[in-house]
Length: 120
Image 1 (cartoon, rainbow, N blue to C red):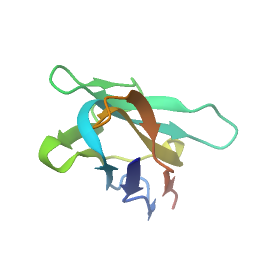
Image 2 (cartoon, rainbow, N blue to C red):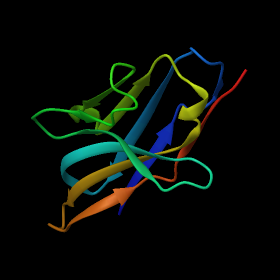
Image 3 (cartoon, rainbow, N blue to C red):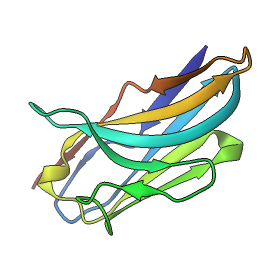
Image 4 (tube, rainbow, N blue to C red):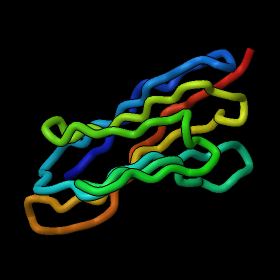
């Protein structure tokens, strides 16, 4: 069984910063792409940033230059450094990963989400 557990969400003032973490655990053989999505109230879930296992990262235009995604393969962890946060960044942030288990089953996994609120 594989789990993704996010942490780091909080209430922050506009212009502030947060760092989200997502750790994958369980019977993991290999992790391919990892990413962060977000869902604001009344809106659809959207891709924020994605990082493959090798290759170029990608970002939604709304966060380019403010957010940075990175990963630690030894720790099966992906991070999202968020700077210059704005109220429109308020959402539940979800971790996503494409994982092959030790049973040679490959599928997509989601975390339960962490709340980020940007407000004065």
